[in-house]
Image 1 (cartoon, rainbow, N blue to C red):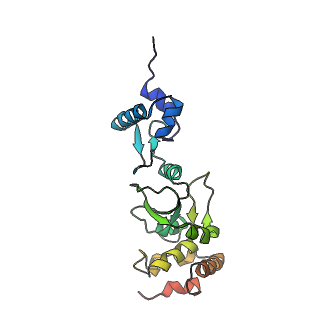
Image 2: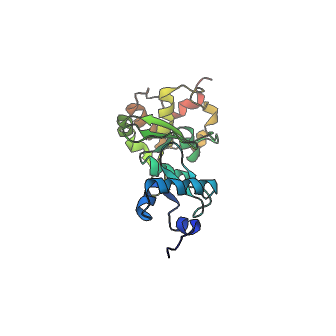
Image 3: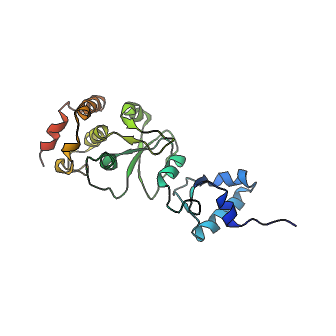
Length: 204
């Protein structure tokens, strides 16, 4: 007699983040059967999808607090945190974006997801900012250094329109090494090489 395996046992055998396609290999299911199980697990609140057509899911039984960043990297390995969230993580601002902004290489798969604002950037942009990207992807979502993130924001929009004003920045957190990084970012992104701290008195 064929032994049935419970949903709990199945999910305990899966990692905190998995792809729907993983189920066809791990459990020898057809794609249709895998989709049916995922549908039932989602209805029971046991899994949650990253969103879009990413085919990436969070195993809430294995990890009740959703690992959104891990799921994002699974779906879009090129993702990098940019914008206000990059400045917040560095302690440069206390502003909290509604959704963290991430840049994703437009030459790879890109999905619209609920928990992040996903911006397509061409491969050239990634090469340009390469030295400003911090973090090991095996350990978590990389982030653009604050000086590079600010330069990237101001390249597209002036103060105010970029989501921040100069007095939203904690300039006491800016160090001498950040000035060097800022100058490198300005040169790479075709911004005027104005000293970073002079931005503190930019007109509102």
